Image (cartoon, rainbow, N blue to C red; front, side):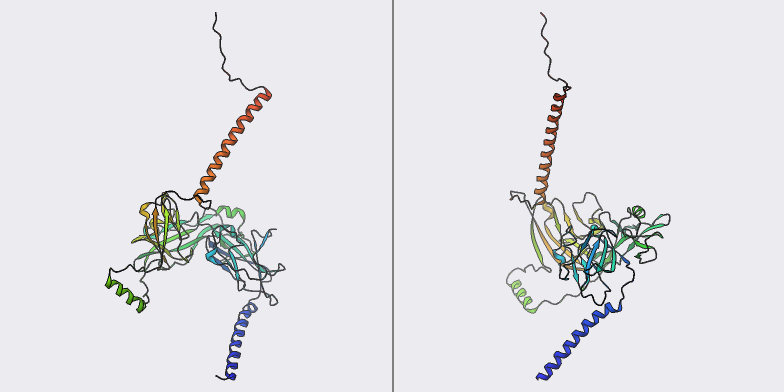
Length: 421
């Protein structure tokens, strides 16, 4: 290829890149910012990750800054940026309960919040370094602790709407998830969040429907929010059946080695998914997470050849459950027993993706570590008991000192009576 052809190709490639950048910038030019700042209402379930796009900005603004307020007009405002837009956070490194300043990321002017918690509910502003706002969101993160599970196969129905005068409280359901298993009977579910309808809402907040916002929205007056506080999110579950996708053929070299080994000796065990090994002490708790799964994903768990259906193992179905699945798709094993040994398989979006081989060892002796939660709990109980005994001891002696000081303490010494002669 001649130098002229190379120059033409490089010029064409640069033109395409320039066109792509201009096309992205034209999105902001076509979307004018509102003259009066309004708040778009958005609701999510706890532990979910969400994205807030900044759909408009002035042409002279090259980088946006995101701000957070708990309430409108609050004096305490968090700045969710390093003022250069270089803050990047990976979802796999985010832990539950960490501060929002650790669980966010800014990419292409959009704000990403990982594993949101109810404490993250509030107002999010897209603006400039000088504090000029040009777009805002009203975010409601609803807790999953009191979530109500409804199983359609058992004839159960969702919660009915509640009416308090002109206030209507109801549940808005998301779309059904895909079937969580393939080739066998599986389950699918849809998440329902709390919403309300009232003519007494603040007009500064944009509604999906007329006079309809989520129950935790800042547009809801305090007295109305108290009436809707008992309406918890819902989880609607039903059975499903989905065929499995055709798997890719294994490479010929791998199959040749496998066939040779099987002819020489016994046929080896070839796992279909990656298997992770773990040893757990007898009587200790364990929580297993599915790789890459989020609360909105369709996730299922199996133990060897036993299917752990949510109709039997969902958290809250039975108050005395030792093995259960929480609303974040984690598998919990409390007080691990010897019969818990085996391989636990994880399904995600209808495909088995990973296995977890669990071994249970006898208690024995093990080094004490302050990173162990049980060690910290035992130490905390010991310190609380010691402080309680110390307080009681000091209180008794203070009472005795006060009695002797003011000389009204009764005399409990035994009296000896002399025998009469």
